[in-house]
Image (cartoon, rainbow, N blue to C red; front, top):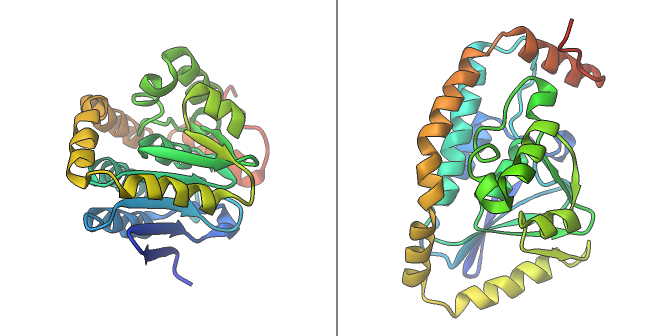
Length: 252
């Protein structure tokens, strides 16, 4: 099975992240495959991004977080930026079909998508400051437009987890469905999209990218700051604590 499964199903393209043993965390090659899939999807009505094995996505993945080379981490950061940019630049509506945890960079994929549908068992949240990083590819810049500044700062800074119902109430997602009803809900949305004008939908999407485009410089500047933090005490301790499954100690 491929790490990224791309299925062109009727009038929709389905992109499935298929590394459930690591909660569908993606590496640079997987990000590149997803980016290309979004960039070549103009002939479809919509694109659906989902995960396998009871998880949506845990964000970026490094095999050895603590001792990874700076260039490897930098490439993961930049490939993540290319991925979220591809989602926003895709001329067709992109639906996040979430079943399970959308954490860290996975939550930022939800932020980047045009719509999001989630099962009742799904959860959402950021992980940055907990692991010695910062969620600068959506959570610190576009998310305040979606759910409000105070709530976005709570999510980005406090690293709390939110249920699907809480995410719906905040405005992060569009619909909550039963745990076995995700595909049916997505197909219902696709049926609605199918009768709409693709050209007009593209105009709406491009016009709606106002805030995303305005955040572009902020994302690149913040990503540069993260690159400069590679190898810092905070990043090393965050990685070590994550691997050892213990709370981090950033104070000593």
